Image (cartoon, rainbow, N blue to C red; front, side):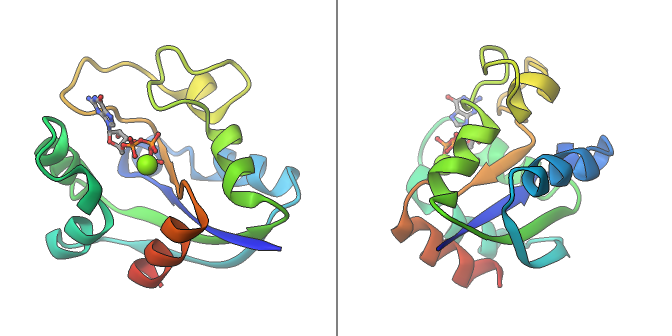
Length: 135
Ligand code: GTP
Ligand code: MG
């Protein structure tokens, strides 16, 4: 089995989609190992998003992630890293496939950062690094 970090981002929590997102995760058969409501400070987000420092969406991304609470989830399952990213859909909600979280619920707000509802770690190395930041 494998673990990943999932975040329901501030747009997902504010829009009341936490339950709908958790329902998809649970229906898929993944196990909730730990879950908490978080209000990350800037230092935490700088660590989490270190790979994106300097990109045009970096500052808007940090501002967005500090705009309200998120739900952090330690999620376990067979090939859950790849599997959750498949459930989430591609980064841009405009073109994310129907049937995915971002494809079904995501909206293009025309903002400087994609408010795409969820985060999922993208590799075993990222998962280990990110889980240590949030839990
Ligand atoms: P995460 O699961 O959140 O990491 O999404 P991802 O792996 O699909 O995207 P990535 O790690 O490349 O980017 C992190 C976050 O930055 C995304 O989820 C978006 O919120 C935002 N973002 C990434 N790329 C762009 C972009 O090209 N334009 C805009 N506006 N926002 C972006
Ligand atoms: Mg990413």
